[in-house]
Amino acid sequence: MTQTSPFSLQMEGITKSFGPVKALQNVTFSLRPATIHALVGENGAGKSTLMKTLAGVHLPDSGRILVNGEPVVFREPADSLRAGIAMIHQELALAEDLSVMENIFLGVYPSRGFPGWVDFKKMENAARELIERFSFDLEPRALVSKLSTAECQAVEILKALARNSKILVLDEPTSSLSEKDASRVVDTLKNLRSKGLSIIYISHRLEEVKTLADDITVLRDGSVVHSSSAAGFTIEDIVRHMVGRPLSDYFPKRESRLGETSFRLENISTNKIREIDLEIKSGEVVGMAGLMGAGRTEVAEAIFGIDTLSTGKVYLNGKQVSIRSPQEAIRSGIAFLTEDRKRTGLCLELACSWNVTLPVLDRLGMASFINPDREEKIVTGNISRLHIKWKGPKAPASSLSGGNQQKLLIARWLLAEAKLVIFDEPTRGIDVGAKREVYEWLNLLAGEGKAILVISSELPELLGITDRILVMRHGALAGNLVTKNTNQEEIMRLAALDTPKVAT
Image 1 (tube, helix red, strand yellow):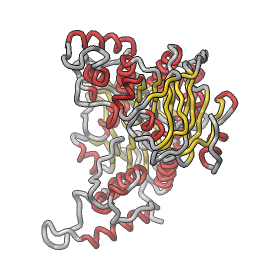
Image 2 (cartoon, rainbow, N blue to C red):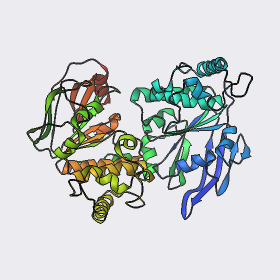
Image 3 (tube, helix red, strand yellow):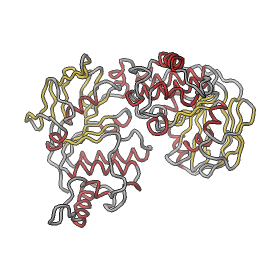
Image 4 (tube, helix red, strand yellow):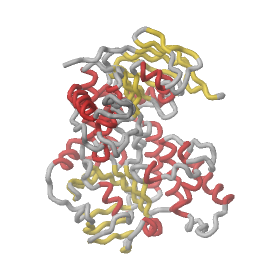
């Protein structure tokens, strides 16, 4: 099997400022040939700025970059790509209506003798050779719109390989993937390393970092605080360097004070889930686990009125409620933080203040006429409670980091005074420091007597923050576990093996 010639990379003394803010301070980073080097740090630590410097988006104020020992200057992204460096962003940029092979060679289509005449047969053969060479499982003529997210990640990687890239930079490649698809991406990266590719891997999934990385560099406040071989470097070590505190503080302690049953589902079904019975007490944090497609999010959508119930009853504080829309759910006292804050949670280009008050204007007495001064005062008060870093109430939600966007959603539902709060993947794509803050607010809500349902693909998270864990399989409940008496193996056994419906 043909292998790619290994590339080495050094970034020495990189400094970059934006006005008075020093984003990078004398950063030195080395990538050894045919290795995976994890770059970790909290949001705002400087990871993106460093990689954008490598990708030619930013020109450093000082310092230098060497590829295979030769100094290079990247004044634009095309310079970096020509040098064999490709950056694959968290938000994939594929043409969904085109085929796999058309996306791979987008902008560099093989011609058939005349300008504008594409040789599709030559393109298919080249795509197939590339797919087989790097052991991907893709069909060149398949439409990208029909692919899974993991398969789309593979197409992005193949785009880079088709342009002879020798160094790949991957930014949070598994943040929106199921455990199964994330495992496929991890296997893909190991395979690419074995074929001579050098990879810079940015991720908040520290278990994956330990599984994949040959070397680890930790950034904090724009500076390197640690860089070494990954061997012998534990997840606790990573967290301690990232946030300046030990892993023992990762999940904040909470004293459970459970009250009466606050929320109950009785035999609910939709066209996606069947015969779900569950109850949550006031002050209780209940987790929901399961493989991708098991029906976890579908349960949340049924509760919130997004999906129509075909059978079953919903009770809040002992009273049956009829919920046929999200508006009715909100009025009944149910809050839902969706798994995709950018697509279904926030209106990114609207002001932060609008994002906080939009669903609860009637509760604030502003259903017909908005009082801007009162709205700003209410929003600013909630923002300060959550310690959200923002440029002000009129700044668009898109200007916030991932962790602060998530806290913006929490601020929204604090105003709603909900009795039940549903968190769907509450810490996806945010760093460990922001995660802890989300956990603290989740604990605070539970301490106020709210019923909490947390859906998460990260089993350590569920084991660290919940009182009980419900396990979904094939649209039905397969298990109801007391958190302190269970473990990851038991949860995965229930999620993966056929088991009968259980009572909750």
